[in-house]
Length: 435
Picture 1: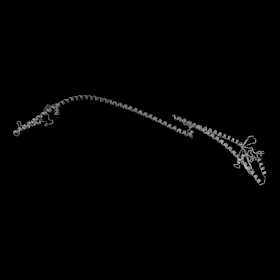
Picture 2: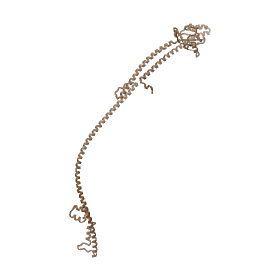
Picture 3: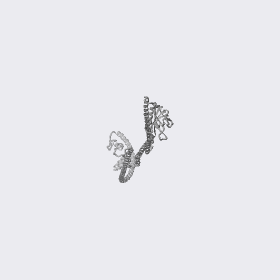
Picture 4: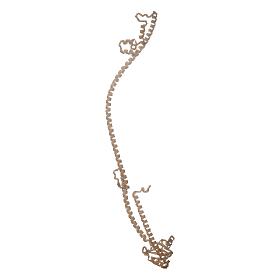
């Protein structure tokens, strides 16, 4: 996880400003160092130019010597005079010639030191002759650093010199320059750069403070607005609307969020109103339904009451009719019992009559046989004194009393026949049922 995500925006801006200040300080220091080094390099280049110029003049004199126009001593004297007069740079910068062993032969700054060994040494105690020999091991010239007394000062100062070996004279040309002024210029430049950097840093801090306020305050306002929106205060003003930076984009997003919350709230309120209307309509419908049911129930109960009264009257009538029907049933039962008894009596009499008819039939048959035999014995078909054919009366008597020859509407026997003559209607029906 990114460690910067745990830091607040103000802290991040402060860290950024601190890094900017550190970078500015390092830049100023590096710039001052580079400026100092550049000044030193420029001075070394100037010293090399002086040495090269001096060696060129010496080479010209040596050419005169080689041409035998002047002697070696004349050439050296001429060159010495020029060294004493030549100055370059500041008034205290001069040319110096010495042997490889360090014996001063020409000194442009102090001729009294000619013929004496060099006394200038570096911080490690090495003389200029030793430093020059070290340079000549890698080439014919180069820069050396050492400490030397500057005129008018008692403390040796740092000095840089360019050395080159002139072989025809076996001498070392040295052109030196103090670098204390370089340090002064470098420090002055450092102060100027520091002042400029400090001004830039102050301006940067002021801008950072303004930027911090321009960002953190709207963000804090957005945070407060979102907190109020979360608590349901949808009329909260959204800060930062109309800005073209990221804060404005966030404000626009929060505005869209608020508008959607408002729409959702309106939709919820509308749904609540619809639900309330639906419940009210439902309650009204239920009340109307209850009233309708109550009215229709009352009407139905009235009708039921009327029908109940009617049914009660009908039931009373049916009860009375049932009582009457019961009484009639009891009478009918008694009559049925009497009829049953009569039927049983008639049945018994019928059985007895049937037995009697059978017996009479048997006797008639026997009589007929007797008569038949008598007729046969008397010779033919003579009639009796009443004009009846032989056997005819017996045969009619037998058919009358034999149930096999009786018609359906004929009485079953003497009793039924006698009763039918008496005109008893009920009894005649009873005789028919019994037969």
